[in-house]
Length: 121
Image 1: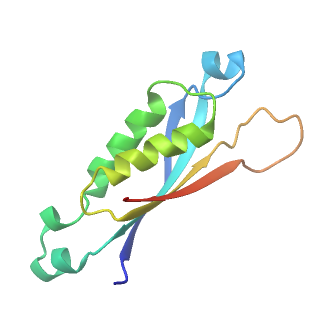
Image 2: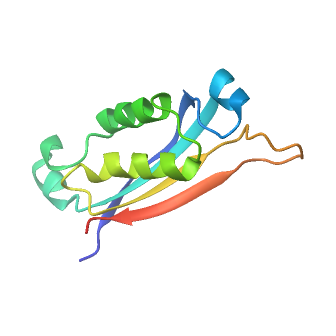
């Protein structure tokens, strides 16, 4: 069965993630993209929010993770965000991208992005 996608793109939150002391102390903006793979047909058939993922509530949960306990790696942050998405029973698979546009790299660059894909086991 092919699944539909619900994408939340460009969610911004301030976090204190990184291996450098300055990153933990000062914090910085992180940007999250989350694509949920869900069968939206039951929700559409009955126009029923209870049969899909409430992306407003999901956004709030994802921001809490970014603003929460610091981690060294954005790979770890991405995993925590994926876990939040997969806690929704209707989500079969998720793709998470964590952007760190202010990463401490002493060269010109646009963005650092870690993208992971996780599914229900």
